[in-house]
Image (cartoon, rainbow, N blue to C red; front, side, top):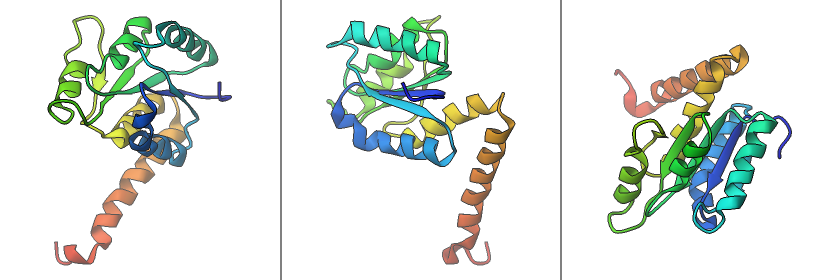
Length: 163
């Protein structure tokens, strides 16, 4: 486990790693320590359960889980922890990610999973940081600076002159 990891990023398949780089890059940019793992909820359920317990013991506060097709990974994690779980539906399948989105967002009552848009790993990382920032004023300040930088980039864009 990465020392001081506050977020666990779990993908069900190595093929999800390129999309999830946006989450790990965002967490890194915000100074949030994280642990990244590839663990299938279907092919390695005992490993997943053990990792969740170890992550909680090590101080992980938020889980981000990326999954496509049946997209059970976020829900399985949510069923094993009371910590926030953010699901990232991945493109693919019969409807290019809609099936994964619906699978993650339609969790049964009592087992919530926050869900971002298909492939939107950046928003998952920002949401995790916002959860952590509730008890971390320094991180809250970094998030404000991040938002201000986004706004400034729009203002600095020459195609927005006079807007």
